[in-house]
Length: 241
Image (cartoon, rainbow, N blue to C red; front, side, top):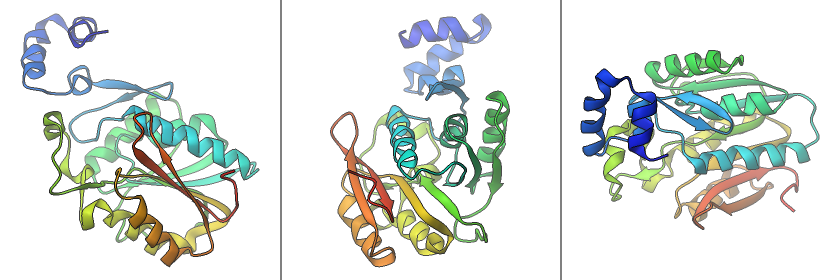
């Protein structure tokens, strides 16, 4: 469907004029209609959360593939920076797992809880800053699509509608990968998987971070459908063959 057709289908007639104006001003169609399809789920979105993208669907798909190679019946999963909750919801619907998902934004956590209810799944959502988050739990999967765009990057005009806190990161976009590895390496079970969505020029830097914090691990850098380096996977098992 075209954006116009989506507005005609999903936006009430009395609000369509306003919707067309937003579209003319480059507002993403997902915010205008209020939802997006993500990995066979419907996820409600608003300007408090990043719009789920098809690249992130591939992160979920690959994570599920590699988790199967770990041969675990029950999984304990942690997501960092859950936003709309789309990753955790997709994982919950496709794995036998307990999932904890954190985000610094109260508004994001509120929407993530609504999306979990919409999709009939139970997830432990916590509003918390990753710098302060503490847990004694051990996880089989830590997954994150954190802010990774460097502050000096040129970005699409539409991105101005999305929350900056979910987009930009210090240290050329790699700051949160360092924080996650630094703070959570002691919260990994044996036979673990870490799954990151990354910026297309960040793979080498993240590899250096992994060598520092998890020097005996196996890693895999994978490309997205547009042939950009987009996913970084880490495990203590050689599951990437």
